[in-house]
Length: 82
Image (tube, rainbow, N blue to C red; front, side):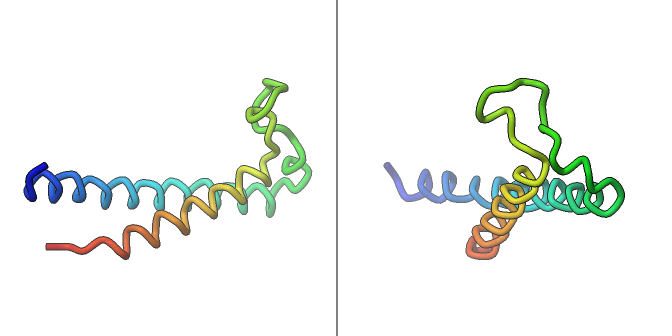
């Protein structure tokens, strides 16, 4: 593999990390908004399908989204801009 092919492959990680950060943050903020306005909804399932991983509760989805957001921000900050 040539050096310019490696550079092109590496550049595709920054937009993906930014997307993970933004959408993870939006889902986490949605979970906080639900917690403040309708706290009883947190214990409801995020989907009507009753087998894993589709039967996660809304607060579980919020915790996962926060982790995805933090990881996406970390990778986004580590990537160098030219």
